[in-house]
View: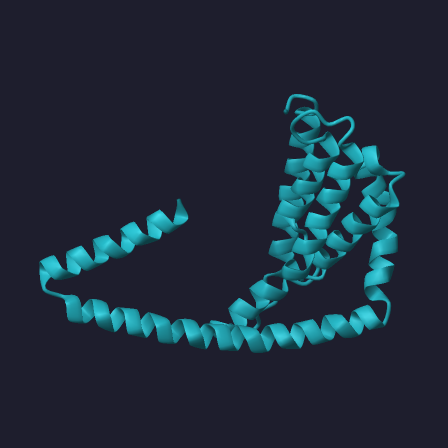
Length: 194
């Protein structure tokens, strides 16, 4: 579907440029956009490398293990169907820790393995659809509360922001509001899915 949308947009652009006699402007815009994209990727790569290094140091110092230990009781309460399954709880804690540290790319495989572990644990009881705990876990991932929004800070720095982390209070407030709303909605709609 998305590929079809992109092809449609490109075709419409070429058609309109040909119709108005502005093919040279279209060509120039394509090349300028490609150049700006490469510059953005390189500047983000540098910022991401710096933040990843800082977070690796924090991980080596035991910060992520500390976060995981702190998250375990909350994770067990949020995923009560799996509280006695150490594989599910550990994968979920690792996923949430990666999200808190702003490592969305690292959080994705951990989230997938947590969902697979939940599915495996529930396969005997699960006829169709997701369990309430699975839904709450997806809400946790979607809200993605971050202590340090690494990717967003990198994008702001690449765009020339003098202080890319000045948005932290707003990020914390909005993601906390999104998480609260999502969890309350999931609780109100428990048992109505599938």
